[in-house]
Amino acid sequence: MELTAIGLGIIVLGAAFGIGKIGQSAIESMSRQPEISGKIQTAMIVAAALVEGVALFGIVVAWLA
Image 1 (tube, rainbow, N blue to C red):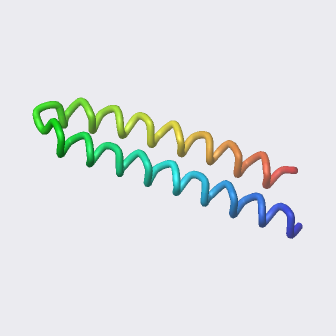
Image 2: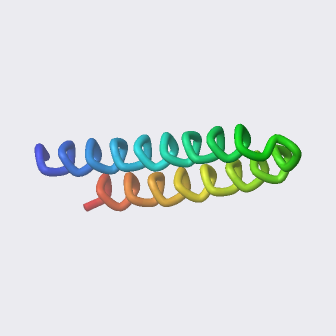
């Protein structure tokens, strides 16, 4: 049971780190080229959704194991 909790914690931390890195890169890119901020925001939202999907899948697998 405790290994599952550790695994879930690692999954959540990994997802939080990934989304934070996506946000950081998007803000940096928008500050360098504000004219394409709409395209950057769209790509950021898609990438964040993919990270969340992988994290959710990992949580389900860890919880069922």
